[in-house]
Amino acid sequence: MVSKIFNKYLEKLITLFNKKEVVIVTSVFLIIWMTLYLILFTPNYYSKNSPLTFEIKKGEPLSSIIDRLYDEGIIPSKRHMYLASYIYIAQNNLRAARFHIPNGLSYLDLVDLFTNGNADFLREVSLRDGLSIKWMAYVLKNKIFMDSTSFVNLSQDKQFVHSLGLKRNTFEGFLMPGKYEFYERSSAKEIIKSLYNSFNKFMNDSLWEQTIKTGYSFEEIVTLASIVKGETNYKEEMPSIASVYFNRLRIGMKLQADPTIQYLQTNGWKRLLFDDLKIKSPYNTYLYAGLPPGPINNPGKTAILSVLYPEKTKYLYFVANGEGQHNFATNYNQHLNNVNKFRRWLKEQKRKQK
Image (cartoon, rainbow, N blue to C red; front, side):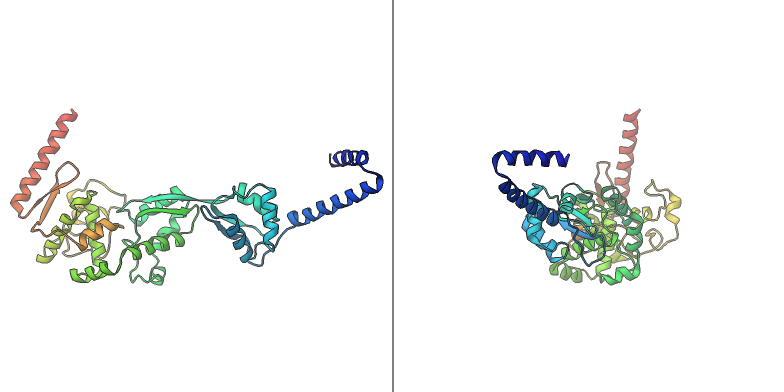
């Protein structure tokens, strides 16, 4: 095929030029062709371990990408990379992703990798408030194909937890929920660091000062926030629920918080039975007064703020009202009335379903 094309090229040249001119033009053509071949197809080798991870960011210009490729020693010439990109017509088609570059790629191979090859892309991940570490791992596995077992184990690795400055045995409670962009197949260590850094950024100086004013430790505030989040998804009533628990703590009354019992269920959330309230565990706030040993989930900003700035009330009780919120009471008789209202509501719902 190549020989046919070359022969046609020679025939055309012969009709236009004499033999001497044909030799000169052909020689120049071959020199240019060989030079381009050597530039574009010769393998380039770097000195680091292979494959080398390289990220192209969203909206990053070609000049920045090539500068970084050169600075990291992946390519020996910026000009040659520009040439390959323009020949490939790829200057505007390089994909934002995380690439794993094997050693020995030519310039054209590298451009082909950036435009058509395998890569780990950025994906938006929503981690809702109140997720436990195990549920976070489940979401991340499904969204970005992360190793969920590694995430759970590393989150509970005392040495790793301490290495990031948290003096606890687990990151439970201190991984900030929210919307993130993570690369597919990111490592558990990378994700945990990102979530914990977000938590630390949220806890600014004014919040630290407010923590001190509450008279409770930083860990205790997060623990109570996790219980508050476990009680409700309705943000507006979180400060009221926080006030109930503070009032109970103040008078030495047991918290009797259902979310702490749910935390002890090995098979996940269920409708609690009377026997569940007898589970012997320091997390059982029906048996033991005070706060449990640590957070039961990762509560998020709203719940933490509700504990730092609780509503000032005399409430000691609350019960669901059947509409996603709660009715509050300052004494037990009021509470029993609210409980009866809720039971009547449940009966009405069952009647409607028949």
